[in-house]
Every structure is written in C-alpha cells, then in structure tokens.
Image 1: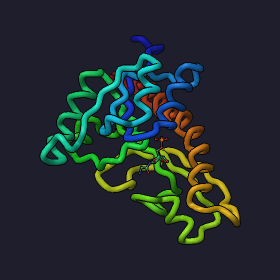
Image 2: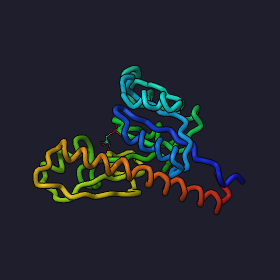
Image 3: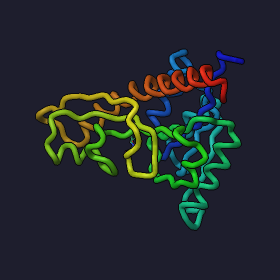
Length: 204
Ligand code: GAR
C-alpha cells in the first residue's frame, strides 16, 4: 500500500480565490499532502482561475446559467470532479448550494469555509450579520458540507476580536487572513485523519 500518496483534491471557486491560493501555496511548501487536480469555477471571469492557470493546475468553467436546474448543474459538476480523479472536494468561496445529486457522490468528502463562527451567521453576508448583531468575537469555520446551508459538522474554527471601529470591510479583511491560514491546516488534518482510517481499515 502506498502510504505516501497525496490525496487528489478539486477546488471549487466563484471569485477572487484567496483561499484556493493559500491551499495551492500550502501544497507547494509541503504543508498540505494534496494533489490539486482541478480548480473549477461557475463564473468564467473568476480572478482565481488566472492564478490556477499560472500554477499549471487544470481549470474548468461550468456556468450554472447554462443548466435548466440545480440537479443538472450538479450532475455536470460530478462529471467534472470525477474526471479529475479528485476524492475530496474543497469549496473555496463557491457561491452555489449543492444538492444531494452532488453530495451523495462524495459523502463526507466536501469541505467548505464560512466567514463566521457557525452556527452563528450562516448564509450570505456573514461578516455584515456579525457587525449588525454587535458580536465581540468573530471568525471563520471549516466544515463538512451537508444539504443545509452552512450546517455540516465543524472541523475547525479560528476566532478574532471585533474592534470598536470595525465595519463590514475591515472585519471581512481580517477574517479572510484567518481563513487563509485555517483552511490549509484544517484540510491537512482532514486528509491525515482519512489516510489513517484507510490504513486502519485497508479500504480506499
Ligand atoms: C471567503 O470569505 C469565504 O469564507 C466566503 O467567500 C469568501 C471567498 O473568498 N464563503 C462564503 O461565504 C460561503 N458561504 P476567496 O474567493 O478569496 O477565497
């Protein structure tokens, strides 16, 4: 059995892609035992795609607008991820809700990062929700994706203090720095735990 092999991963993005970049850099520096097989975006103009291309990582664009419903979009996503050979799917600012059509193909193998301390502030504009609520501690969460919105089992969290003068922008920027540090380490812990499980059970 090859115990040194890197886990094949697909990263799904919709925009700027700083979390994806942090994951790519963590692979390059040897902190993350992943082989990034695919960066897929549902938006053709996602800036993150350019970075992935520069890094010679295969990229793909699948626009949800080209599909009549969520299920057919998710089917196409499944095909793209399976074709890449990825076993773990990492959502990094991917702004589409995935249905069971997708999730059932990768059970407990889809991870997401959310810019709040879940279960507080799920959904859109989490940092704005935190500012409006007036919380004193904010942060980010890496979790396994289930069919709810930001409801799956939590793998890791990081917290920071909300400063007196913080607004949505300043808080978002500081949470993003935390995210970019948390995601690589949380993914590495997840990958190592699954590798250990494989060794113990002898199953892929
Ligand atoms: C990140 O803040 C991520 O937590 C958030 O989108 C941003 C993507 O930034 N995701 C969600 O809100 C998902 N519910 P990035 O493109 O620079 O990685």
